[in-house]
Length: 327
Ligand code: HEC
Image (cartoon, rainbow, N blue to C red):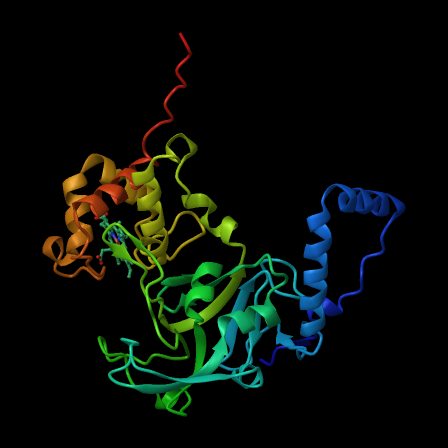
């Protein structure tokens, strides 16, 4: 079935909202009390002007080809949460970035890659700059998260061509010899941008990507932020930041996070609380417990890194401490 085309107007082409008298009074008050507001508005005018030239992308309401990329989250011109599709041809018509990559472990050697940067895609497809995170969902329900800080630091790219070839001509993945299409994400060069205890920033390079979501980072992470009664504990915060980048790709919390593992956050919390030895051993080397384990090990995590993860996951099982009254 061919999907009917839905014209997607870029956000800057939406009719301006009429301003009521109340709105005028309120905004002049705001200008009066917050001079920095003017500056911010001028800056966003500038952004809007530069975006006016971007092409209008007509997304599809139904899949037209197996190679279409599914889109979700909050999309420009679509009600929040609705799914749309974009064709490979449409993606190829957007501004392309080409580079030679030498450090992407999905490729056996130096490889020519081209595609659309995630920042560029979000500018064309997300409902507004509030969708500051792109989530890439793979056919096995692994999810790679690209928060704003990651995009700024590493400039990830939705890959459309590898050595000039479409997905049918791509090399197989180095570990499982599987097809890496229909889409994958790569970046020109990866230099870790942070280290927390024994965990360095890890390259997010998913393949088998079938869906992208444009989301508000705060909303996605809301279900896994440390509970308020422990939020100031530094070890808990460190565990949170590690889990957010590592574990959340395969372990879900409600509707957020990957479901590849099929063991949600509260199950991990139960293990961290009731059997910390098993929890630690599984994180280090899952295959030592379970020869069939699909989870990759983290042999470089030292005791303190494991302690941070344990402290963080335990917060979901520990009841809030009653506040102590002053004597
Ligand atoms: C690439 C996917 C992936 C990532 C990333 C991942 N896991 Fe897992 N995890 C799995 C899978 C799949 C299982 C189910 C058993 C298996 O195949 O290993 C699992 C199982 C587990 C178990 C055993 C649960 C049980 O009920 O026996 C623990 C504990 C665990 N993971 C903790 C973690 C923690 C903590 C992190 C982050 C530091 C993490 N995992 C990151 C995929 C992952």
